Structures are given as structure tokens and as C-alpha cells.
Amino acid sequence: MRGLPIIALGALLAGRGLAGEFDCIIEPSKSVEVRAASEGLIEKIWVDRGDMVRIGQVLVTLDSGVERAAADAARYRSTMQGKIRTGESRVEFSSAKYDRREKLASQSFISLHDRDEALTEKRLAESELIEARDDRRLAEIEFRRLSEQLRLRTIKSPLDGVVVDRLLHAGELADNRDLRKPILRLADIGTLYVEVLMPLEAFGRLALGQSVEVLPEAPVGGRYTATVKVIDRVHDAASGTFGVRLEMANPGLKLPAGIKCRASFPAIGGRPATPPAVRPERKSPPAPPGKPM
Image (cartoon, rainbow, N blue to C red; front, top):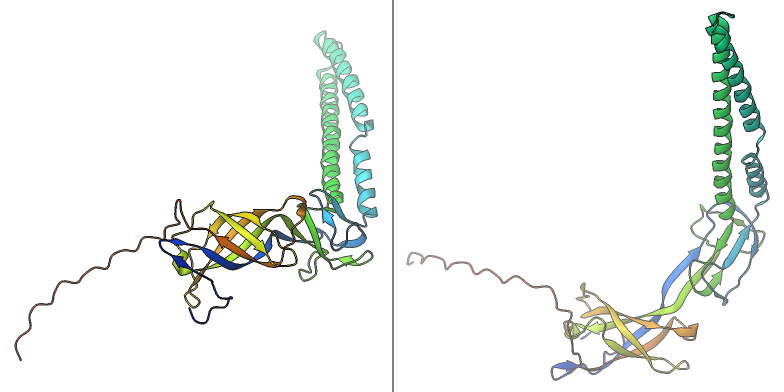
């Protein structure tokens, strides 16, 4: 296979099986760029490059004095009782007044106009009470909205992993519109991906879930077990290769990512990853004999 962009693929075919070691690279299973959800001044960054982080751990806090004050004001408004108690008192008074006027009107001691005025006063008091309760409900909703905005001023880790890089510092502006410069870069190395390039002769002889031995390069060294998770079905015709992804556990985050390795494949067995079926070519009917020249 001439022109391969990788180191020699090693001993390939042995009888019906495939055995040998192939070049690979160990990568994080997930990489995340941490950014602020809203623009703000960075108050403190709690981690630095190389630190291990846990999911939910506070990474960055933005200055939030204004947002905290607005949330406190909304919380106070959501607990105010004055308007509601005033409305309840007015409803109670107007209801009693209307009941008295209704009895007097039924005995013709007062005019129906006076009774209707008492009824209108009662209905207005009930409407004012409903309005006061609606205002309190809106204040509760506003408090929740401002609390969510305040929560976004604290950035937490979305994964278990390691801080790969720190690009901003306390006192700098975190601009959520600037996609070129995140605050931090994180990598999930609790589970590692091992990317392997395989020759086309191996396609159809690999099995999903198959165990593969991974040998990281020195000075890390050691032998680790990974499983086949992805077998590419789009091949590179120029190099005559296709990609295979292995998944490997990394308990204690002891194994680093971004290092070269060798993947040792035993003789293939089990359920193969069969290539898609190819339609047989149609044979055109023979042409009728032509006239002799």
C-alpha cells in the first residue's frame, strides 16, 4: 500500500484471521470549551491548567452585584402581603354592605339604585383583590427569572475530567459573543477513545464489542484493554484504510490522553461488521447479429 499517511501497518493477513499491531492515538472521549452564558466581568476562576474537576464543580464566577440586588428586590416583592390583605378587607366590607343594602331594598327602605351601587362597590373590591394576587404571582415569576440569570453567573463543570487550558483571568471580560476565546478548555479522560487506522483487508473481520489490547508508547507503557465501538463505513481510497474507534476505561484518570499507542488485534472471530451489499451488475442482452460487411 503505497503512499499511506501512517507508519507501516504491520503483519496483516495470517490465514483466514487478522493478527498484528497497528498505530493508534489515545484521545479524550469529550472536549469542552467553557464559556459564559452572558457577558460579564470575571470575578474569580477557581481552577487552573492541569487541575482535575468533577461534574458540577464551580469553575468560574462572574461579577453579579447588580443581578443579585435585582433578584433580592424581586424576592421581596413576591412575598409582600399588604395589597392582598387590603383587598381582602375591602371585599369583606363591601360584601357585608351589599348584604345589608339588599335586605333594605327588599323591604323598600332604600332605592334599587343604592343597592346597585353597593353591588358595584363589591365587584370592584373583588377585582382589586384579583389584581393584587396577579401582581404577586408576576413578582414570583420575575424572581425565578432573575434567579436563573444569577445562576448563569456561576459556571460549573459539565463533566469529570481535567483542565486542558486556561485562556482568561480574573478581571477580564467574558464575552459570550466572542467564540474565539473561551475561558477554559476541559477534556473528559475518564473514558478514552483510541483511534486506529486499519487496512481495507481488515474490513468485515472486525466485530463490534471485540476486545483489543492497547499498548501506550513510552514512558507511559503498560497494557490496557479496550473494546471496538465504531467501525467506519466510509473508507479512504487513497490510503486504502478505514477508521476504527476503541473505547477504553481510565479509572482514577491515571492514563493521559494525546499519546501514541499500538493496538494489538487478535485473530478475528465472532460477528463481523459486514460491508453493505452490492447489487449484482445487470448483463445486457446480446446484440442481434449485424449484417455481413
